[in-house]
Image (cartoon, rainbow, N blue to C red; front, top):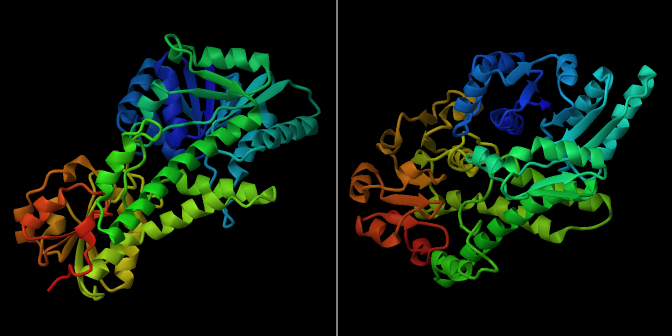
Length: 450
């Protein structure tokens, strides 16, 4: 098939590469001329395992194309995927200006039948708005050209997006049109040859499914963090509790890992957007409000544990931070707990030494050069001469540590583990004060730097 994708960001680029890799011819359109110029050279502006290789392979194969011209993109494919950003407005609602701008471009340039596929995460009812915008532009042109609009939400996890696309648990398509069903089945045929994964449903149901899925996963994270905070106050170990409840097949282990809160481009935005959608129809989504509130509070726990360790005095302290991205295998720092921690530390008069295997460039872009920020070359440089170490992201590079070396390197014996990577007994045996998340004695109020 010949397929057009508007948007060369995380979702658009992964979708384009994966569809090209199974034999489709795909054109990716973006208004960012610099980004498109780099992509044409095989340079990928974001980090996602395997993505750069996939871009270069399909460029060479002649199946992947990039353009900044809307007319060229609209003419290229029958399927027109919209995969542009929907950033949150101040009230938490999703901003649809980019989605509707693409709809207008399609209406302005189409001259034969098109299927417009909403891949972006959008509120319920967006397909109707896209349909109305295209129809309005066609009417202005004085032409009648048939088109359809369907919903095909993405369920990609940063860090494993290619695997998720190629081996999706389900492929949701919201449509009432038999013609759209046939075309979407042809598009995804390489992925359903051995197992039927296509799930057809109404457009509004498909739009809600995406938000409901992310809200459910965010709820599990906030729930286990609530349990962790309770465990701290009861002298229990949340890791033992997690194993106890996760072994129940009705609950499972996925997304019940306690930590310093969720971040990224999806969960925070989508929980707020779904709560806002609820308010627009006169319903107060109390659970969603609570999920977001718990997560905001959880992001402050690392700073609070440091303040506890140093008896509230963090001025002129140097804090080492391992991990900046909101999760491993990405350089994405959007709403990452590390950002809340750094900004709180600077406000308290502290300095930070940071290291992340992939997100150093993003940190430099966000914060620039400043005297209270050291962008370390490796984890060893980050902790050299620091007063404490905080783990914000569970990169595999941080899982094995010589704790005796760490005790000798740090000026003060303080480790705050926001991802519960280590065995508390091993850390303490090395003479370190260990503050984890919900691990019994790890949060003893008597553990302070003497």
